[in-house]
Length: 327
Image 1 (tube, rainbow, N blue to C red):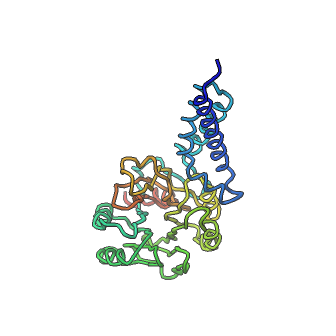
Image 2: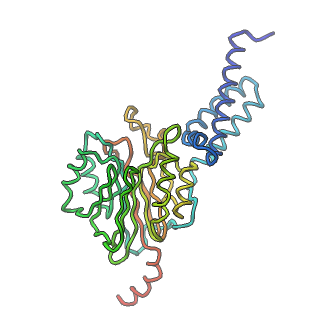
């Protein structure tokens, strides 16, 4: 018995959705060839989940070839975006134990949200975790005033348009502090007990059809000049697995400090849906060992705070001597 017109239409609609979803997923793997293709990769998890749904619908409708192909594309999308840590370089190593006896330091990465209505939550978070250095974005006039309230505890700061580096440890004045005018980038060297770490913060522009690729082209020289021991924090507006993040890691010879899942979700959506958001905030490292990377609690921004704990890589070589001296 021939299928009724509504059933035929449903099959056609699901088939078109499945084909479009598969092409969308596959396009994201070729992001290095054009920013438009890379833009599709940022939604890889969401499109893969949708692909699983339409693939199952096709299999129920006995459209096995297209259903199987869509399911394969969705599985590939999930396998390359959920779970594994995407480290594109070997500039730093992830330490296996948080009980490491070496000194540990903290960097807090946070997009403040320019019109955040609960700045007291941010200040409370800083007081609770007492990071050594903070990289922040969307520093509006409101935030310049509010961050002034912690100036006694964090007297060292570099404000460059809408991004800033705030530190309770002194800057290394023998090295240049720089703001890339109009490019939402700041960098400085910070003295951690006699050893210097290059610290930088960036707020990349939105992906294609916006100007993210051109913005990154202009920033490339500054990124390459961070030095052999450095941390780069920021709101990259790019997913962990994207060609944009791969390019940044290659340009800087750094690795992403842990894959911690979604860090951004529209304020229009409930905070309980964070897993449906996008991983746009990152910290990259080189010449250091990352001991722990974690998301902190909601502070009224559309981004979650990211706390990274790190140690100097050569401390493990110095530790036996220090222990012997102590004995």
